Amino acid sequence: MRVISRRTGDGIEVFDADLESARVFPAPPGTRGWAVTSTRDGLVCATDDAVIRLGPDGRQRWRFDAGRPGPHRGAARLDAAFSADDTLVWVYAPHVLADRGDSDEWIVLDAATGTPRSRRPLPVTGHGGSHFPLRDGRMLLDVGEGQDGSRVFLAAADGDVHDYGWGDRVLIDVSPDQRGFMTVEHQEQRDVAFHDLAGGAARFRLGVADFGADPELAVIEWAGGYLDADTAVVVVYGEDGATGEPWWRHHRVAVHTGEVLGDLGIVTIDENDLRPLGDGTYVISDTDGTLRRM
Image (cartoon, rainbow, N blue to C red; front, side, top):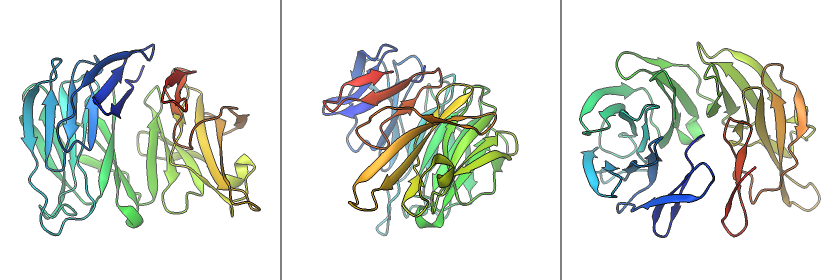
């Protein structure tokens, strides 16, 4: 099961498989993002200028300084994630928009010490990134470039970085067998696609109309993901043509055939709340903040 965590007034709360609170880590000042080890006893936090590793006792084990943002910084945030085996920490550093360098970097750190294993430039000018660890040790990275689009990369800890070559796809999730992944069009959000991990070829695409919605009034949301090995959840978001009231639906899709299987029939607090876990279950939030695994 994927590790579930959230920011609270007390720090970073981590949940066990039954969604009971397992521990709360203190959040270092300036924390903007974080990742939890698969064992739930370690944390890395990303601030504006550093990545900080906390141990089970909540104390700092190491700090990696990315450099202070310059006086002409834009909207840019570091992103950090553990490798699938928790031995490495991968960091996306948007140096260009942070006004601290001429190129963005993808950095791999030793999770025990914070020592850099590799540092590689990326041909992007990103605002932020999202990591997707693979069990074979590689990492997928989605970099958001704002109105300029979104880029997807794949790499091992050492060696070349593979650029899938798109500028208009947002990576949403990786399949449970890790042979494929799901993307949504960046700019217009007109379609969702399911790809082979190797090479990125699209197995099929589905547009807004395939879900019974009007493309003039609805979009495919940057949300959802793999419910299990055979099924994904695609979120369609729109506004009522008469009242302007927002609505959203969670549609099930057969990932091997492209068949739309129907509405999941679940009510959520917003269009981004539902988190598929890949094992046939998903997590949603009640209005009081209580997490539910369904």
